[in-house]
Length: 139
View 1 (tube, rainbow, N blue to C red):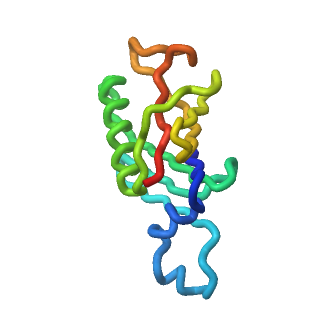
View 2: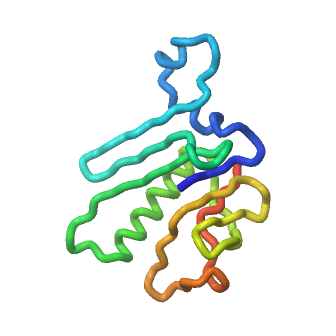
């Protein structure tokens, strides 16, 4: 998922994740950074986006047991996403889908997010009637 900031530099979200020992290697501030944290069944990647200007890239990965239901997996990944947004200091807002692909734009002008959003069983699949998801507002 890519989060594009509209009112401040993307590095402001990444700076808290730069180890002070590395930041101290140069007198100038870092221009980008990446963090990958892996656990036994989970991995989180936070990086500067190579696709969108002034954006960050987030990837949440988690392994599930073979008998896990789609709803269980979707619910856990949603919680993981919400937890990471909390750490980053951004929040999800109501938004509208602006293309048939996966781009979502928030109506308040904060951050634009692009992501592939799987639908749960029973949810809408077309852009015209799908509820927007993953538009983010900066604090």
